[in-house]
Length: 253
Image: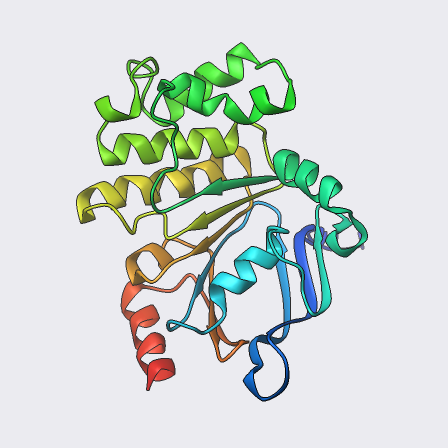
């Protein structure tokens, strides 16, 4: 009798971003505030993770630590195999430039530059030459091929955020960090931006971490992490907006 062929187990997903025993304390003595109190976190390659929590829960602090914009009181953050605590300030700046893309609520485009110049800004600062084919593909992906030479004042809010997303992707970063990416947009425009961000994960395998207060935004993520009082208190996978909203209600209560 022929041996039954056993299925091959899939290879474990590679961890792109990792935090271990992460704490952040502001101040000293009786006035000290513990924004994070020992967070462990693994974010896999090709994954979109949403982070949610009440105001003051520690979600913005966590994002700043993952981005190397702040240093932890204790614990470690590793991005693309590099532990951030081992880097000098100058080395951290270089790592952020190469390995981390940022998307903010208020776009942060330079008004005197057109869309293409804003997208190319990270490469210009690094003294790198753009890949013309990649640039064309990005503008096509964000739906702005015909608007690449317009300045921000000539673009709608949604178009400006699309430029910001292209700028974040131009360096092919290890991680894209999005801080309330739809917070300054109407619901219809927000839907398009969220679709674009999920598309960048599916099309390019772009690891993405999104801090948001919007349950609809969180519902586009592969996983939602809920943070309260400086700790991750719950995780949902492939959750609906209603499920996210219910958990937020429990946490807030």
